[in-house]
Image (cartoon, rainbow, N blue to C red; front, side, top):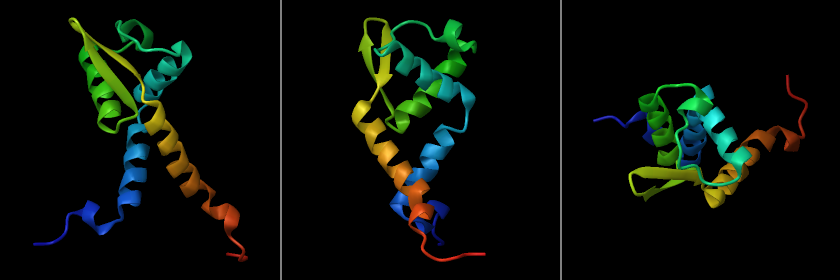
Length: 110
């Protein structure tokens, strides 16, 4: 049996691709921006802030949590979400290393 496409690439390549995918939807970007703007956990409803239906918001929160850029804690009947600061810092380092590759290029390319 052949390799899965993700197995053809390095862990780092797959990680960068996962970050790109999670940033590929403006609702997830808006959720992250809101979490940074309030600078605390949000336990309330993001529907009014983002403008999408609750099930849609929940799916986007799930995607952000799956890649560990946010974390959530159950408090009573609600879940509180906030930025996972350590993982956010690690993500920025990984993305910056990838994006800064061209800066170290010493050859005159086409």
